[in-house]
Image (tube, rainbow, N blue to C red; front, side, top):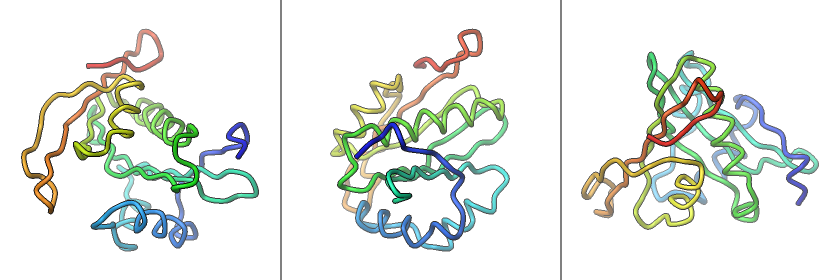
Length: 159
């Protein structure tokens, strides 16, 4: 797979069959089509997709913002594309898009068992800021992470 040819686009309703296939494969309690449609229709949401090769959907991210605070709500990468930079590209693009909307801090939560996602977020510069005990339906904890966007450098830095 050539990630040099990967492109990021706004998510549309036409993408949802592919998005939902990845969502269902990635999460025990997947978002519904209506949930994604609400994100697509919201002026406070930034749903993005990554396409590779001949236009195959490799992954997606949904972020939202209110005033100067942003949150990454959902991100997933197709199994055969994981570990190849698609997730990083999606998160970096979402952070840049959030910054363009005046966001200063970006938060997210991640399952304690999702070691690859936690490692990715830490490499990007997210820092652990808390734990939500028994947050998920199976009793698993969520790690809360945050990232501060540094305007003076034109980049983002950890909290």
